[in-house]
Image (cartoon, rainbow, N blue to C red):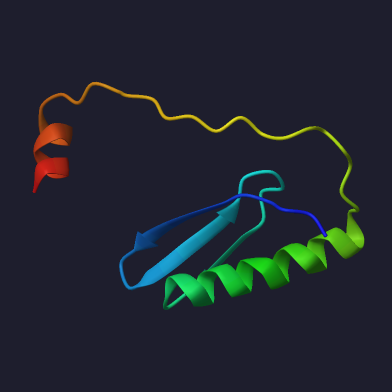
Length: 76
């Protein structure tokens, strides 16, 4: 068994889940469904492309400056 990272965000009426390490992506109507679909997609991917040991990813956050229309859209 291996632990991987999932990033989940909402797009309109669906949740999109992406595995950071492999790039696999899936979606669902709930967070749980998106994560379950991502797990299935990732397992199928790994059957074809076995996981290689590359170490753990580094997760961080960063800040960007928003200007003009972009800043107003984010606040709305």
